[in-house]
Amino acid sequence: MFKNSYFILRYFTICIVFGSNTAVSFAQDTAKMDAIYSGVPWFDQNGNIVSAHGANIIKELDTFYLFGESHTDTSNAFAGFNCYSSKDLYNWKFESVALPAQESGKLGPNRVGERVKVMKCPKTGEFIMYMHADSLTYKDQFVGYAVSKEIKGPYVFKGPLLFQGKPIKKWDMGTFQDDDGSGYVLVHGGEIYKLSDDFTSVTEKVNENITSGFESPTLFRKDDIYYFIGSHLTSWEKNDNYYYTSISLKGPWISQGLVAPENTLTWNSQSTFVLPIQGLKETTYMFMGDRWSFPKQASSATYVWQPLSIAGTSVSMPKFQEAWRINTSTGVVTIVENKDIIIKNTNEEIQYLGKWIHTDNGNMLLESKSDDKNASFSIKFKGQQIGLTSFVGPENGYAKVVLTDKKGNTMYTAIIDMYSKSSDLVQVFKSPILKKNNYELIVSVTGERPNWSDKKKANYGSTGNTISLHQITIKK
Ligand code: DGJ
Figure 1 (spheres, rainbow, N blue to C red):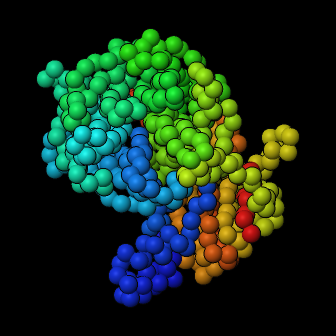
Figure 2 (cartoon, helix red, strand yellow):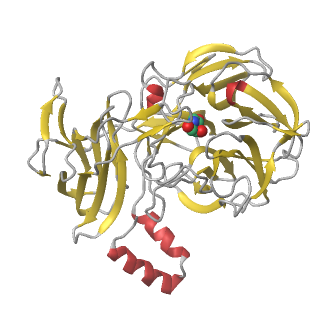
Figure 3 (cartoon, helix red, strand yellow):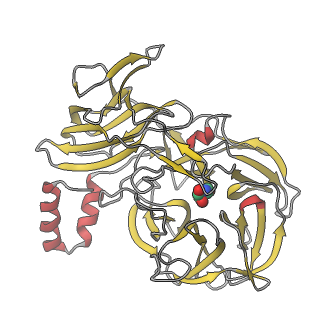
C-alpha cells in the first residue's frame, strides 16, 4: 500500500487543485518501472500489488489492456476479474474490476472464477470475456462468458458458453484469435472450439483432445505454424510446460518437448497467454506465466513474462531474463544489463536482528538465512531503486518487505514468496524507480509459508519458513 504521508499530503493538495484523477498520474510519474521484471511484485499507480493472474492482454489503439483474476490471501473464492492498462507493458494502471463477484449464481459467493480472457468480436465490436467458472471444490466446471461494449467493462455475466445447446464442462481454458479475426476457445487436454460470428456461442469443435492433463492451454500463431503450450496437472505447483505444433488448428499436433530447460519448472511458472507484440521492425512473442503462491495469491503470486525464441517449430526460453525491455513501436527486445551497485549479504551496511545463519553455498554464493519469527534485516541507502536477490527453495517461506522514506513513512510493502520446489538464486524484489533520495528497506521473517492440498488431498508447498538474502542491488 502507498502509505507515505508526504504523498498523501500531495495527493490531497493536487486533488483539491486539479481533481482526483491527477493524483493517479502523480503517483505514476513519481515511481515508474523501466523494464519487465519477472517474479517480483508489481505495483500499480496507487502502490497496490497488481492482481491479474490467469491473464491475457489485448491491444486497443496504442494501449494494452491486461485482464486477470483478482485474488485474496484468505480464500480461493472468486473475487472478480481486474482490468489494468499500460502503454509500455512495464507500468500497469488499475482501471476497474471488469467483472465483480456476483451477488448470487455461478460466479457468486463461494464459487471459483479463473483464467479470464477477453477478445474483441470483429463483427459486433463488442468485448467478450471468457472464463472458467466452478464450485470451490472444482466439481461444477464450465466455460462461461460475459459481454461489454466498453473494453474496461462493466461486463455482464451471461452464464455458460453453449455448444450444441450444452455447456462445455471443462476447467482450464484459454482463447485464441486467428489472423482472420475468428475466435476460438481452448480447453485443457487440447480441445479447440470455434466461436460463432458474434463470439457468444460455439459452432464447431475444431480439435479433439490431444493428451491428458495439458492445463492452462495457450495457443498462438507465427506465420503458418500454430504453437500450443500447456502444463502438467499439479494444482498450483509449477511444472515443466510443454508444447505441440501444427499447420492447422485441426491438427495433427506434433509433440515438440519443453518450453524452458528441464527442471526449471518453466522458470517457475505456468503458461496463461502468449502476446504477439507487433512492431514496425519485428514481432516479439511474449510468454505470460503465473508464479502462483497459495494461500497468498493476492500478495505474493507474481508474473513471469519472457520473450520467446522461435525458429521453425521450435519455441524456447533458454535463459531466464530477469529484466528486459520491449519497444512497443518497433517490437524490438533488449535485455537489461544490471549495472546496479551490489551489496553482499555480509556487508556491514546491512543490520541483522534476531537469529541468522550466514553460510557459504560454494563458489562465493553467500547466503544469510533465518526462520526466526523475530528476525529481520534492514539497510539504509541513498538511491533510486533497490532489489533483493535470494535463494529460493523447498523449505522457504514468506518474507515481509517494507520500503520507507527518510522520515520513516512507508512507501511500499510486499509479501515475498521465497518458496520454490526447485532451488534457485533469483531476484525476488525490485522497487519502482524513485526520486533519488534516502530510503530504508526492512525485510522480516513472517513465520508463514505457501502450502496447500488439492482436491485429491495431495499436499504441496514448502516445509519451512526460511527467508534468504544473497545480495542487495541499488541503482544510485
Ligand atoms: C491448475 C490450474 O491451471 C489453475 O488455473 C487452478 O485451477 C489450479 N489448478 C487449482 O488447483
